[in-house]
Amino acid sequence: MKAAVLHGINTEYQYQEFDKPAIGEDEVLIKVSHAALNHRDVWIQKGQYAGLVFPIICGSDGCGTVVEMGASVASDLLGKEVLINPSLNWGNNPKTQAKDYVILGLPNHGTFAEYVKVKARLVYPKPAHLSSEEAAAFPLAGLTAFRALMGRAKAVAGEKVLVTGIGGGVALFAAQFAVAAGCEVYVTSGSDDKIERVKSLGVKGGANYKVADWHKALAKETGGFDVIIDGAGGPDFAKLIDLCKPGGRIAVYGATAGTWNPGVPAKVFWKQIDILGSTMGTDEQFEEMIDFINKHKIVPVVAKKFGLNQCEEAAKYMDEGKQFGKIILEIN
Image 1 (cartoon, rainbow, N blue to C red):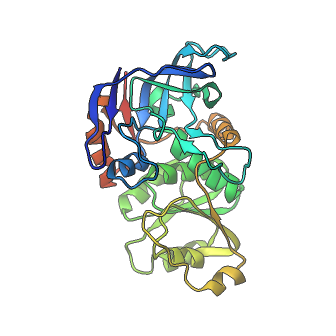
Image 2 (cartoon, helix red, strand yellow):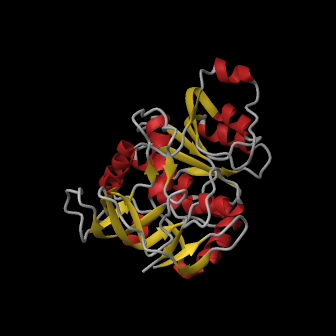
């Protein structure tokens, strides 16, 4: 089969022949139609990720058709178009992942290939209102956003929600999910254009974090937030503490801006703020997310499409960080 393969740190994705996966008795083989990139795929390429293995086929997100099933798979999946849950081996504790937890695409070969194998229990019918490329955009970033917003922060209708760093996949999904849940949603970005664009998804407004005292202007406009979803961290985290209402919750799923400065500790305990770490999600939350997407007919934003043989170009495009929405690979 054809695949985009990494052979080492700081090497390019190579479009080449690779062994087609052989499935186990509880697995299915999927002919991938579309995959999506995540920052994880770029970090693996740069060697900024734990548990590196080479050669590796990256890719956590994928949509395709089941073409082969293991002997113990009792289902009618054969020939069906499915979505893949990339959250492997979560374990029995819904509060935290197990020690052997991994994500599809490292150390297991992922979706940047014509075929991928996964456990049969990790595939779900593609939402009928979505195209294959749209469905492929959801799994990793969607699950991360859903757990942070609905599972950890437990956002409910009528609350004010702030999502930082709009434009990336997780942030966009968090904003879309919050709007669908009936929340009043605002965002931050370093781009005025992205703030304007996201308003078409039902977002009320936002602030450009490159402007001095942006948080003070946003606090004056909104009165503060019940829920904040943050993937940046960094020195601006102290401003999120200021923006959080008493009794509010801040769910943190990333640290792209580096080490945070939470500011004055008294603001955290006096305002009774919950700071909640979150990453990926359980199998049950993935299923809940699919049900939520189906119920509200949510459609992801696709920034740009590339062919599988253009994986290196797609990775460079993601590394530039200018995209608004998900970057898709068209496989077959």
